[in-house]
Length: 301
Image 1: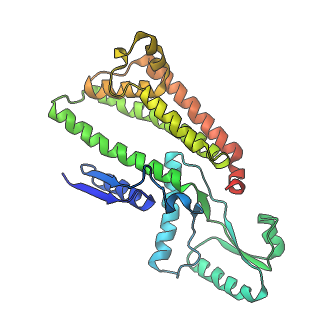
Image 2: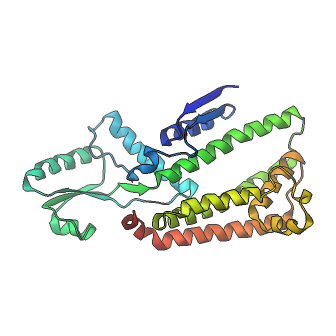
Image 3: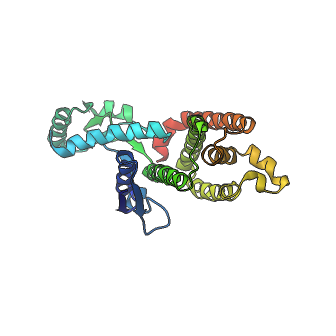
């Protein structure tokens, strides 16, 4: 079995590791990062722009990769519940001498197949009331996203995709293969995904307006980790705490994975149903929060 080592936990390193896990599912991947969290440097401190590729030479590899990257970034965000917005941008000429260069950019953008339009001052102010210019180029396909959140999502996906083959290897070593109970796994993963998407939408959206949310979220998640029966069974805990495990969707999902993979049994239906309802409510809440403030995200960033 091949083992890959990727140096750097920025978005390039994490995207590389993620793609390796997708193309070589039986390989193991280790990402080396000197900081205590991913996206600690340039990835987490940039303007958060999803670039359209206005400036690149038509037909060049840079132009092709930029357009393809825009599409793949949007697809990745939608698939993983990451807030983003295709808000467009204005490139302005503040002096008549700059207009020919703006027109040249317009021609280049059209040659690159981008949705662009040349605007006069009044038209530009319809997009940005406070802009001062003699002409502007509107690029409709430019967007914004939190690349720190994208990187953390990639890191979680890499960890998950690597951990599943390891788990199967452990099952093989101890001759404890999952039974037909494995058929329950897609349902458990669907409930898990709904919970993750909802939490990501709430945390990411609130973090745009209240920057300390990301630190608070880390503390809460660490607390939940210690309160979740990962290294022990829920029925091994003191009886006074078992009700809390039943009400926690994270604990229920962990127990469902344990029952499927190690005991060859179906998840406990009562707690799983409650976890499904909770996850659905969290997902709906996250989507509602994002929808209500999505138009304000651009100004906040």
